[in-house]
Length: 326
Length: 255
Image 1 (cartoon, each protein chain N blue to C red):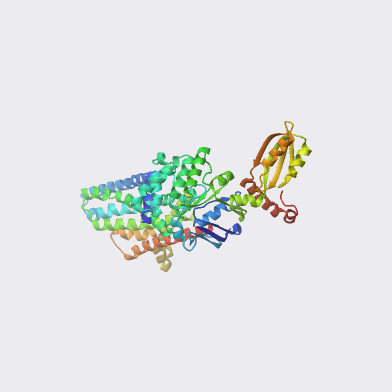
Image 2: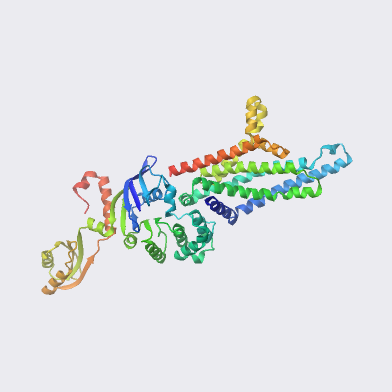
């Protein structure tokens, strides 16, 4: 649905993004991650046909964003980062205006506007001036204007920023409900959000893509091991040795003991669940097993590793090669 | 029709914000005062001419009331129209709404046309409200409708030019004040260009006189409909609108 090929954008001499390539298949929700100033918004603005790229091509629904801009614009809904709305307009007339400009027919318009107001939970403020609305409501009006024409592709730049936790949950479930019929690309700072909402992620740093793929694949790719936290009352060296001896266990590390119990971090090959074996071992040795917990290696850790790794390489080229980040 | 959607939106913004009401009020206040003082002066002059019939020979209500009124109204427009147009693009740019507007499936030309026509419609309504003055005059005296018609046509054409220049200035900046001052300055320069025509003399004088916005409006209020003047305003307007389109495109590339 979205194909981006070697996209580069320069503002004067300053490069905003360089050689960005990715693709999104129909019905997918893709998270666009990156630290501030990484080039997320720039990429989204190019996809939304707000500005042209310096080189490279981007296609949405098979149409080029530069040469067939009108065709692309008919098929997208865009929500820019700071949610720019006409503060002197009322909610319902505003959405009606957007629907009309986006080519929704007169007969259908009233129904569509009512429908998106319901869906985005703004029906109760439909006669209020947008300028008088709270941040959360404005965000939802912004989302409503993006989906009012029922576009194939949604480009959402930080759709949950500045919302309270309840609103965040509502917006997330709204976005999730859009999957399937719509292709969504959304950028965010909030990493757990991505794991909750998105099928795949694209991580961008300093204008270049550093990792992309489905979340599970990415986590596996960056952390080929699975990790357990174990708390056992018993002779520390013996415990360590016996756990180490379980097939599939790659390493055992001591953690500072708590309440007289030894704490260990066990790394095993991914896909190898050694929890049962540790339990059996403890039972057999009559050690007290206080805790046995699988620690999920999350997207957050992948993100930190990728972004930090980049920085280490950039700052001290060779040193980073000799000593890869832990 | 996309232009119609933009047009309605701009009209709505003019009337839900206080802009339209304030502009109408101030304009009618000043125009009304001008009309009153010109008409009162004319009454006085016609009373005096009753004593001295020779003086009243050239006294004519079209020429002595409506013509000065038209020229006074055009001065108010010079001051007021930049304030009507300053918002059109500058405000969209400042608030960031231009980012949404320019990613909707609507061409830059249609956005410009919708906005321009909205400002022009607002102006036309404002001017139409002054039709009250000739109606008052016609209650007391015989009025020639020809020069009134051309006078209003002149005002509309001149206003069209002012608005086009204002829209262009608004597309250049995100600061409304800058847009208003630029418009006012540019119009004023074209206004006073004719003044130096007398000293310049020769070909230069003629060129200067031809460029002056004021000069072209004068013949309309005399009741003269000259294609030269009509073309001057139309060309000026189209040039400003063309430049606006270019400026919108340039902004896109700059990002």
